[in-house]
Image 1 (cartoon, rainbow, N blue to C red):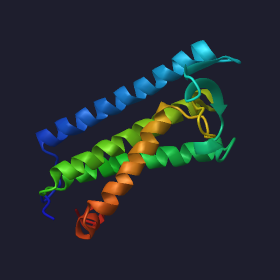
Image 2 (image 1 turned 120 degrees about the vertical axis):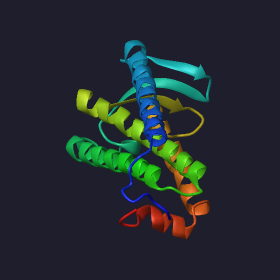
Image 3 (image 1 turned 30 degrees about the vertical axis):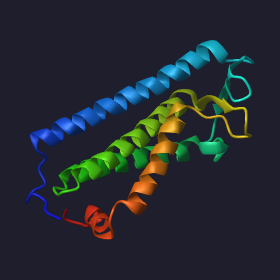
Length: 182
C-alpha cells in the first residue's frame, strides 16, 4: 500500500469526509424525526396498521439494545455505543488516508460505516435523552422484535459490510488497512 509520508488529507479527501459527515447528520435527523412523529401520534396504546397483516407502527420504549438485549444497562450500552462510534469514525478517516487503486471499494465501505455511525448516534441520543430507545416498526407477518430506522441503518449496513469484507476485500488489503504506520 502506498501512503503519503505524513498521511495528510487532501482537499478532495476533506471535502469527501465533510460530505460523509453531512450524510450522517441527515440520517440522524431522519431517524429522530420519525421517532418524534411516532411519539406525537402513537405514544400510549395506539398503533397504526400500515400494510394489513404485514407491517404496522406501534410505540415501544426499549431499555436494551437489539432485540431487547441488556435491558436497563444504559451506562454499559452508551459506553459501548460511543466507543464503537469513535472507532468507526477513525476507521472512515483511516480509509481515506490509504492511497491506492481501490478508492471506490473503500468509499463504499466508508458509506456503510457512516450508516452504522448514524444508527448508533440516533439510538444513543434516545438513550441519553429518554433512558430508552423509541422503537416502532413492527412486522406482523413474523414474530420479530419491534425496531426503528436507526436499527435498519445498523443492521443492513453491517450485513452488507460483512459481505464486502469477506468476499471483496483481499487479505492483503485487509491487512494493509489495519497495518500500523499506514
